Image (cartoon, rainbow, N blue to C red):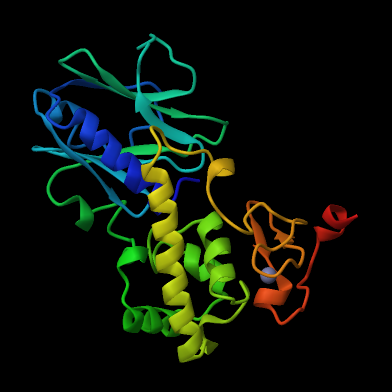
Length: 278
Ligand SMILES: [Zn+2]
């Protein structure tokens, strides 16, 4: 799933390319894609795109009368629509501009979870953005410490909980825990001040490195391209210490970690690694 760095860099690219373009029409291509009834998307017709912004993992296409909030979820992409086919493959919605260009929202796979919300007024204070925690890259260390103590849970799940802090998903959660030398299963309420400090530094570094990489690209990266040391590297040597990266698999995601760097050598409820290590 695109996370904060991928969505941020993409918002910057789209602003660069489409700022000022006047909306001719938004057309839903799947009947489930539009999540709001009023205002209708036609309220933005004839208005220039002011900017494309980001909040958490959402893109915000801002027009003067309303904002389109777009959540790409797992397989969604928002790209320049070169062909403008009548029935584009995986097409979810299209923004066509008066200069003849268009943006197409697609979603690969069968989940159909990507969505578009049209909101008037301040989009940050309305669904779906009003339930998000603060931006993960803007937290100072005392705020981070407070959010950890106030929401006792395992660190990996805490990092991915968008209501606590926004922008981090499975890949960054794996990379941040590894960079901070913390177990993904550590209890957030029991972290020492020293560990909180390491976590804060790791979050900043991992987000910045991904953002730097993403800004070098012409289009959003696929997950296999993104930089990292442990995510999807089970069975490979840890780039820090050479121990084998381990995996704990869940139905919809995988926790990757290095025992030597993160758990004092302890191998955790390891349900998959043996097949990688054979
Ligand atoms: Zn290691």
